[in-house]
Length: 304
Length: 273
Image (tube, rainbow over all chains, first blue to last red; front, side, top):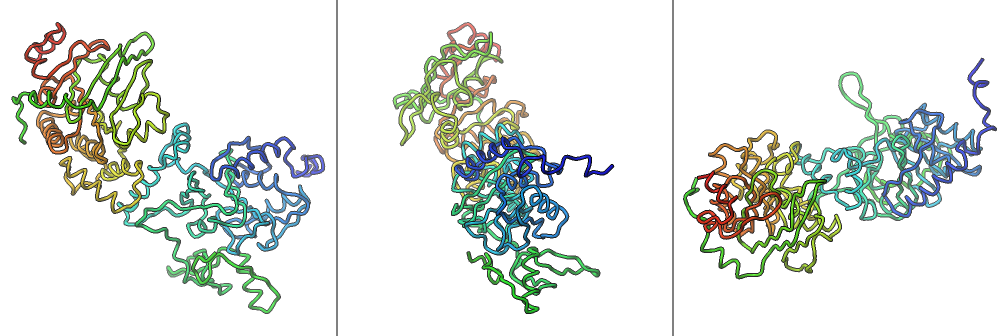
């Protein structure tokens, strides 16, 4: 007896694993999410062969978008070779016939946990972000009914108050990942736990972004060419992490978001968080034919 | 402490104030909670710059009426108008939730008996005042900080503690933070729901002293609810006596206290005396 003969063969499931009614519902909610940028749309999150909290929201959106011509890239904290990323990528490919890829330029759908690739996404690409907590107001208003009223009234004063308190207590804004951002001047969203470095990449971007939380059963979207503005005080500008001068110890690239690796003796070294970019840089350095696309950041400065 | 408890209410100013257009007008306001008739055909008129005191026993409808004035509740019937600059006249009870919230944020301040209702206990005192300004759309940190400091100072709150959390403060200090929050946007109307209840007598006197000074310096229109006749007598220009959801007597403060007409008012005044 093995897992293979205990489970149904893939051929017995619907195309792309999800049944047609589930995909129909998701498509409707995705269209609504595009129509009202940043507004959370509830959906009946289905069971998928993965535990809640491991990217089921992103997976369901990807399975709804995918077709045989798609090319799937899945990253976890910027890395293509993480166990979870590899499992999701292989699963999507097996149930849809879509090709797998690590190359950002080659992908038509990029599903990601906690990062946006450094290479600029095009208008024919879709970014799907896995979101653990889609509600930016949860920290200031635990009652979901009141939080919905606050969204309806655009009552976001308490979010600014949180930032005010951080400046009063610590002298600067301490909010790191999932920085609350105003979408299209109307709804505040938490842009999944992407670092502050990545938030400007969503502003007026060419690509479509879906953010989906399977456990919380809600999804929202940032359509192409939509304003995404982090909440800031007019006299306290938005600041990204100070990674501009850090150098990747493996690929030698600099000016991108880095992972910090503690070393014996108390110091740190750094590796570029977008692993595919690092691989491309190494390949190029070795003289192999490699195309590195335009990046959002150039020499550590946001330039797109 | 400059509070003179023996000073009669401002009998001299009240008739003068009443010659102007009223700031607040409520007509035929009724509210029922199940079998209990909390308010029955209540009429209220408040003039700009005056202090209207509302007295009555527990359950007489004072706080319900104040909640109506702050648009926190909608009556079963009634009409409520505020004479505000650049604002069309109309029944405020007909406003949508968002419009109510914005109107209250900009034009009405409230101090609750229980500071937990009016303050965010986990945030700093200055943050509590800043929140009021944030709702009204202020987005400059330095301006928020400056205005919070100014409002706290006006409420005689020690500025060295402006970033202390209200939970760390005494009851009197918490009331001052509430007061600072209420006056931060210079509201047209300040509602005070038993602001000194639960405080010891010396702190009560300090808070009342601050209120009197604010009223004198800024001419803020106040509606003060209390069951303490001494507080009402000290503060109010006019007094409204409520019982079982109805207004049984109203008039100039001195008039009501010196020559009460209704048996219930007589009972109240004599019980106090």
